[in-house]
Length: 139
Image 1 (cartoon, rainbow, N blue to C red):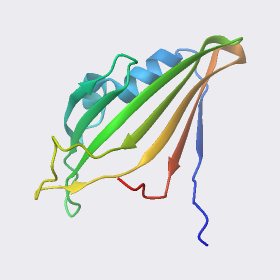
Image 2 (image 1 turned 180 degrees about the vertical axis):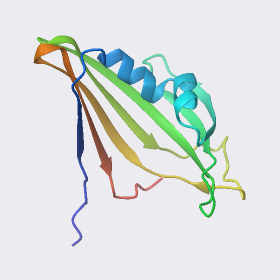
Image 3 (image 1 turned 120 degrees about the vertical axis):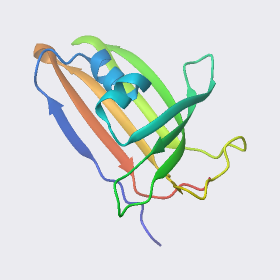
Image 4 (image 1 turned 90 degrees about the horizontal axis):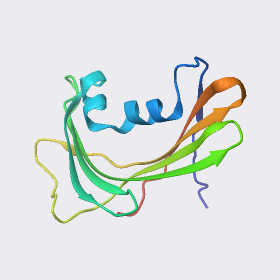
């Protein structure tokens, strides 16, 4: 029996000017992401839900010799208060199938599932933890 592989990367941001909402915006706001990530060609919201979850179509133009990539992703954001500040933010970003967005011959469809945790620590420090799943989900 194969055991699931999970990789965990912890990247503490030790500057006080990075608050949780700023980190969240830089990673997941469409305009901010397109400003700093030059490989992003387009990000379009396909559907928004009342609880803040959204389905997005993302298109990435990667440099040669890599193929361009596209992704249909569901983003779920949960905010929880803590005693250290404005609260922790957890974002689940996972690939999904959506019949409105078929695959393209010009790009390779991405897949993945990542949990992004943005934590408020004592002293105004913000910690960012990315936990990607290396198991291909059944879509």
